[in-house]
Image (tube, rainbow, N blue to C red; front, side, top):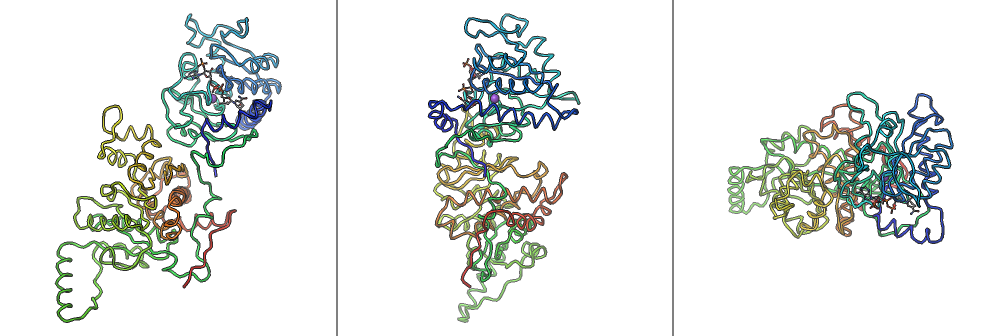
Length: 569
Ligand SMILES: NC(=O)C1=CN([C@@H]2O[C@H](COP(=O)(O)OP(=O)(O)OC[C@H]3O[C@@H](n4cnc5c(N)ncnc54)[C@H](OP(=O)(O)O)[C@@H]3O)[C@@H](O)[C@H]2O)[C@@H](O)CC1
Ligand SMILES: [K+]
């Protein structure tokens, strides 16, 4: 599991060690240079550090200090290192180390009484990179981004720092692009909230010290961090202080409901499904298939009934009452349930919500809220959820969600659906109702807001899926390929979430915070199933569902004790 701590927690953990004279920056810089050595060996044709051209972009704080110290170590290994000083001051220790190691220093900053280096820009403002800097960047094998770390307020880079970021070759049109390593965080990104205001240099690797910061896991900033390499510099972080977590494969086994030798289907969890309509049966097929293939004990699929069906049922019931005959004859499956049964014959069909017991519900996928019959079924599920039955509410069910649910209910909107849901509740940003762009710019903020308003666990679908559960606990999962953004993908995810809620229903009722971890595990498995279905290529939602058993089996075989539970027969 990857855990991110806030910059305040990291600073608090650093403080006593710095006061005690622990060499935290030396540790950070050493680890940083080790990662750079690895990257240079991997990426350079010569496979070595000697002769590699490295540019260090150094701000005036300790982030720049880390970068300059690492630059010094690289220079001592034979790299041709150029440091560009971007601040009005430079980290004195880092600069001294760099100069002593033979690093070429460019910049117009005063250190003590001395002005060092060459003029950066051609103008007096000094916020345009000059030709020496541009040449160094154009020829660099690797750029170290040490402009600003956790000292950033996330409002965007300014002055020369901003101009330097813009001057790094991007490789567009097949041109040269250096490997970019961010020091602690990509400079200027929202360290604690994942916001991106202004230009941020996209990193291939971020070497982060003490602990990952939330912005490395939270979109949109997480999309600029590349591979996150955490470095232990000896900090002790507060146990309860985790701001954001990310489940990894080894965490899934402990969450997944695994049957014991004496388990039977009812005790293993029955999932009631109200997904799809006669007109659009696909979502019913996909959500049901996913739940079955994720290992739920049984699916009870609620068929769609039209008004004529209901009239007939009422008449039959009245006739039975007159005959004092309580046994209802089994009803033939309608067209929707017939489609579902054709794909998954193991499913049991129910005539209505409440016909037969379930441990959890999945509702809303592929349901048009304007469809009166299906809307009534979904409303019955929402009522059951309000009464304490775990449920995943997707797509068409979201319109029926109001305040006062518990975290045992998982909402699964995408950004557009979440924006609409929030706007309907009067949420505004910059004086206008929240829209999709606003949610995509600050997904964590709005997922938390939806959790606060609804009380439910909120799983916000996206390239990085965010889950906010009880107490604001947050999980960020980025497990799927971009190909997973395909029709029906959300229906499959709803089925997997539903399977987990049904399989661990008692645990979720006892501890609603568990729902967020289960939803995060579902997102992980869903993403991996997409990779498994068609590595590197297009993927269909049904193929993702079909890949679930193999992916789950693989994850259960990993380290970590599976939660094998012998349920009473
Ligand atoms: N202490 C230690 O031993 C250890 C520290 N560690 C490292 O320290 C980092 C934190 O260092 P920090 O606290 O010095 O802040 P830092 O991130 O360098 O930023 C301050 C500088 O940025 C500048 N700046 C700010 N905003 C800006 C903007 N928008 N656009 C442009 N510039 C902007 C600001 O300029 P000023 O406002 O002063 O003009 C100032 O120069 C942390 O991330 C980790 O890398 C680790 O190695 C562990 C050991
Ligand atoms: K940085």
